Image (cartoon, rainbow, N blue to C red; front, side, top):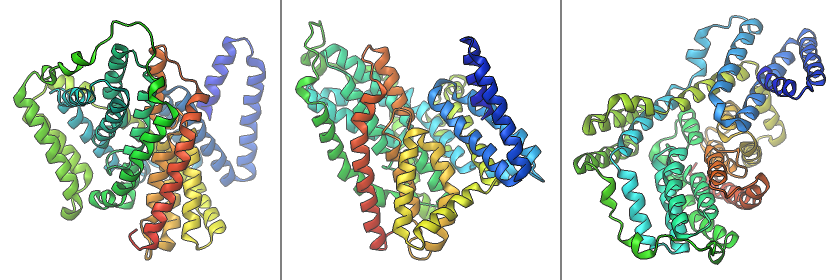
Length: 479
């Protein structure tokens, strides 16, 4: 909250309109003090709830400064915790707040991806897909959609978006196509790919680590849904952006189909031996994920082992590799865990779980419906990662009443709603933010309203289908 108000005050001071805002700031602080003196528990809830919400409003608005925002918020939150919580120590943070399994998966996959990408493996795959399409609009769209899904299933969504969007921008410029449908299709593909494997999205990693869901178990549940919804998403985008309207019909030297077919994909590969070893290390890591549950090996251990194995085999420049590791994601997650942990200390999440239970009673499916709606809605407004993290203890508490009959249903509802609900606004996922910024830089600006008009219908459709699909599996006793 203090972070949010500080930024507001700074901006108002620049425009010489700071006096009214300063008055509001003083009033808010006074109200918080009064709340705390009258009802300490309610005061704590109000303080840390506002801190959590304002932090992620700021993260959504100033995404390029998310690390600074979340670190400052953590500093404020920890200072408040030392003042307001009895017996609060650093041990609370290390032992109770931080999800080390999640950090291990993110770190290990970052090592693996950066090491593998240096060999040209992903660039080679992109050129191969481009050659297959021969530059035709609809085949090119379908292949970029599928390629984005495949890459997002093993890479971070942002990494996959950066790789594919660079190909899309270059290709569309040469062929004189509007890149907007292709870029937005890639965003939709990353949302759907977030359900393809247990390590394909951060909400899935978060829930999987807390619920103890295995890689194969998740794949068996999610893969049929992804296979059903992939053609649905492709044809939805085709109806929204008809292929005949994608060419810009402008004079352009361009790149003809013959030139595309003549591109040699091996030109991006500098060392064939390292290329093959990188492919082997990636395949071994995926096999390790598949065998993690039968062998009872944590996903984080396999991810780090896969990253180290790729480094040993391909021997990249270690100093450059360290700078390319996704440290920002690790810091962001660490800060997120602290903020959620502080919120959990106020017991407001337990109150929220009790509210769910009062409304739904013992009805499992009504509880699932409420989680689907709330998670899906707020994932698009704030960000699917903090919303999923905040709902973890809530779902865990509600799920205790159903752990003997349907122990996984509510957890899967949370994963699906977080992955699919984060796509209906550009702020709900990092891929959406990246897509809007890329289009703006390429002089194809897409405003907030146009983005929602495109994605809100398909997001609602996918959320409804996911709710029905998971409910059928729960009734059949599979989850």
